Length: 312
Image (cartoon, rainbow, N blue to C red; front, side, top):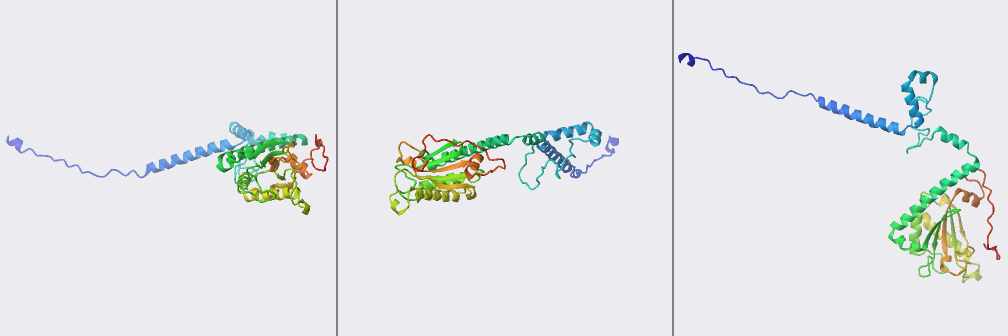
């Protein structure tokens, strides 16, 4: 018992210290990961924006680099642009669509007739898109949609024809006046805003019915009235954003081109006609080539009702 009492008692004391410092290694790893992802997405973007011919050239280079270097080919270094894949015009801020050599060769092999047909196809596509745009604007605008019955749009050989016709209970102008009514101003402003970015030229014409102007003894007739109404409409269209430089002509046709031939005094004969011209119609109207190609020789249209009073 005495020996057990003399046995030493050992007390272990453990000193608690802080965790070892990681040194921020995880931040470096995360930065490497972000850099790798950025490089990956940049590579995907470059592959998506590179032409098919250049992709094949890059593949050939990696398959046989010495052959491309010694013999030559459509590799990544075979480019006249300062920035590979950036196109020839470095001043452009929007993306450029690079045409393949086959497309360029195809255009070079086109005859003037084929080029004119291609331009006509592009014109039709633009004009149909414009028609859909104006129709959607009218549908979305509660005020314009109320007057839809007085707005007529048709695709004609000359282009997109937009006619704003008069109504007996809702005239566009006061009788014998070129002062635009408020609702007519709303229609013209809506159409004018949709023509803000139009590429084609525009023809604007004013029409009256066959009722003689009351003060015709002064020399002011339906011819002057229709021209004044066309110019009043032009001012509203330009104020809404339509480029004034895109106007090819503004004319007054009086009652020479009636909408309802069988009823010359009908209110619908009083109208404003806005025509977004095709290139071909513009060349015929102005009598000169717009596209740089020889003007098309088209047969003169024969009217079923030959003029008898000097009017058409």
